[in-house]
Length: 102
Image (cartoon, rainbow, N blue to C red; front, side, top):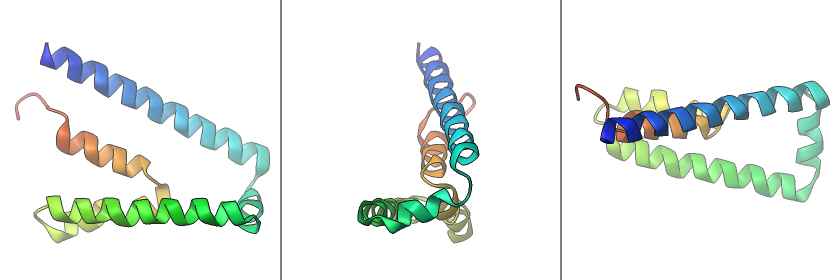
């Protein structure tokens, strides 16, 4: 039963990831690269950006505390600040979902 739950969990997360990427692509095509300037022009846009960055710092601390090798932790943490918490989700899946043969 655990293998089935793991497979279903991975499928749901993969589907959510694909939907997220589709939404990002749609937003970029609709607004273009200049749309981010509009977000930063608003006070709440700055608050949201600060919130995401704080989440990245906290998630980076968790990754550095868990990973044994510092370069592996850095390779997981740095992309969070560029790609967002999709990287955090990927790290959690890789580290905490049971895998066959492990």
